[in-house]
Image (cartoon, rainbow, N blue to C red):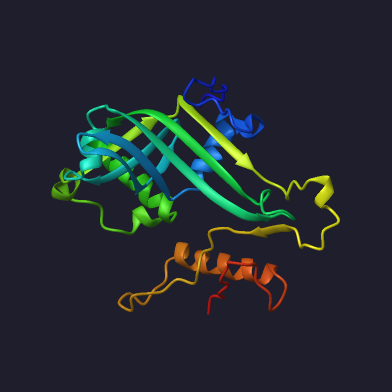
Amino acid sequence: MSQKPMPPSERTRVRRVADRGHYDRATLHAILDDAYLCHLAFTDDHGTHCIPTACWREGEHLYIHGSNGSRMLKLAATGSQVCVTVTHLDGLVMARSAFHHSMNYRSAVIYGSFEVVAGAAKAAAMDAFLERIALGRSGQARPGDANELAATTVLRIGLEEAATKIRSGGPKDDEADMALPVWAGVLPLRLQGQRPVPDGVQPSVPDYVRSWGQCVCAEAMAEAPGETMPGRAVTVDA
């Protein structure tokens, strides 16, 4: 797998706070691999649209899928130019002045066009999607049959024209504001898994569901007893 940096294009070059921009593949891969959703922007005869959809990365491509009837997928399958974004909100930055409040985030932007994934590669891509949701799931769930696969469009876009932008750390207050009696700092945020909720039909619990619950439990125990981070809900697997 190529680890060569992605030279910024006119579309991907970060201009506002340029030192937050990154063009290396490792950073891009990490941001995409933390995502379950992306937003796909496109233009058709009815205007400009931005629609969320599930995504997953394999190598140097980002994949999406959906019904053959999807307006978004129909247009993307023609090779039209699109823009794909992924954003993770990591914290609310509380400064001493209203002006300097900010947010910590990791974001990625991809420009280009999608291509259709067909045949055996389509079925393999759908297996990879299930594995992205839960490692081992594709070996237990019923695979899509011929009719279901025929009704599904799978597309992928290359990562050649992409950039990431990251903000981390605390507030950047003006020196004149440092003596103000105002609390400043960061309120951390993250996507938090919760305890699995069974549908009550299948009594046995697969390892990947059990490990999900154990992960939630371990993360909860790692926090101070009786305390939670702002904006988070902590549950412990029974």
